[in-house]
Length: 155
Image (cartoon, rainbow, N blue to C red; front, side):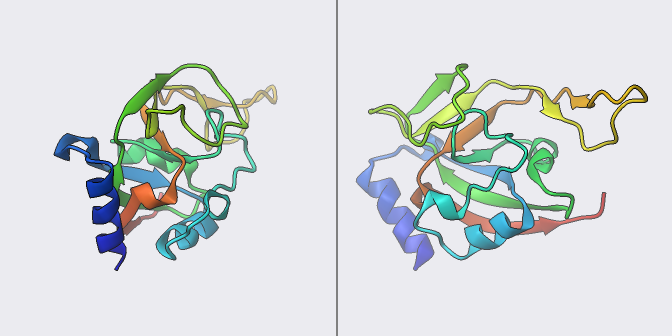
């Protein structure tokens, strides 16, 4: 049923095959469970106690599993999803409150940013940053996301 709903969305939006891609998503453990339960509201997915969602209240994806790992809460689970990116808008302006993309777009492309490292602070107490500059894609509609596999690992 979920596959059919995803395929219907792709057909309704008349998306070309290159506009639907497989990407990695890292979420806290409760976010992974919410994603797998077929949410209809983005609020069910977006939980960001660390303010990593600096380009809006959407779900963030990457071509690279290592980038997605930055959004896990230390439990070592990421999700490989089929994502209907549609018309992509490139974005450099941070907006923590953004809840949708501009008219005519289906997703955002963020070219890369520094993230807090998942390591203790430096000796002088300064937070470590990770130079994770791989591009990210952000979607704001759960219907654009079809989870395929949950990847669990130790790290």
